[in-house]
Image (cartoon, rainbow, N blue to C red; front, side, top):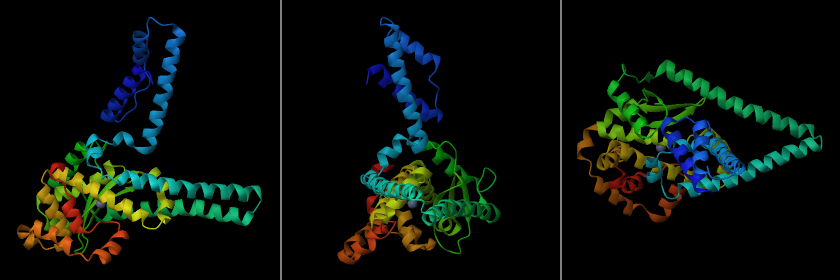
Length: 331
Ligand SMILES: [Zn+2]
C-alpha cells in the first residue's frame, strides 16, 4: 500500500475513534493527494485517490459491522491472550454451520420441498421475534421496577459509570439500573434492542467498598467496550457454541479481560481482587478482614481432575483463578 494511503487511513482511524464518526472522503483529502502527487499525472493521482476511497469504504464497513472503532488501546492492552483465538474458532465453526443452514435452505427451495421451507420460515421469523419481544419486555420491566441511575439518582454511582464509560471511549454512557435481587450478588451488561445497559444488584453494592464497586462497574463496562455484546458478532458466533466446551472457554477469557478492565478503572488491583473474593464471601462485616493471598492460595487445594471438569463447562473462571489473574499493572 502506498505510504500516503497508509498514513491517511491511520489518521482517519484515529479521528473516527475520537469522534466516533466517519469523515466523508472530503475535499481536503483530495488536496492532500494533489500536494503529495502534484508532480505526477492526473490519472495517477486519480488512481491513488480511488485506492484510498476503496480502502476507506472497506474500513467504514468493517468498523460499522464489528464496532472495532470502539476498541480503545486500553482494551487491546488488557484483553486476555486467548480471547481472540477462541473468538476466531467460534467464527469459523459458526460460519460453517451458518453456511450449512443457507445451503440447506437453497436446496429446499431448489427441490420445492415446502415442508422444509416452512420450518426455515418458522425458525427464521420465530427466533428473532422471540428475542426482540424478550428484550422489549425486559426493558419495560427494568424501567418500571428498577432504579435508573442518573445525575439526580444515586449520583456517586452514576458518576462512576459515566467516568468509566468515558475512559473506555464508549460513545454513550450505558443506561444503568440498580435493583433488588433479594440478596443475590450479581451485575451484568446487556444489549437490549441495540442500546447498552448495565445492571447492578443492591446486594452487591451493599457489601462492597467504593473501589470494589468501581471494579464491578468497570468489569461490566468492559463487556461493552470490548465488543463482547456486539449483536452481529453474537449472531455469527452463535452456532459455534454447539462445539463442546468452546463457548464456555471463550466466555471465560472474556471474563478475564473484563476483570483487568475493572482493575484498570478502579485503579486499585487489591480492591479488584477483594471484590472478586467478596463474591465468594458475601458478608459485608468481613470485607475489611479479607486475606487475598490466603484466598488465592486456595487454588492449590482445588482437586486437579474435578477442578478441571467443573471449570471447562463454566462461563466464568473460578474465583481463586480470577483473583490470581488480576495484574498489578492493569491499574
Ligand atoms: Zn462479566
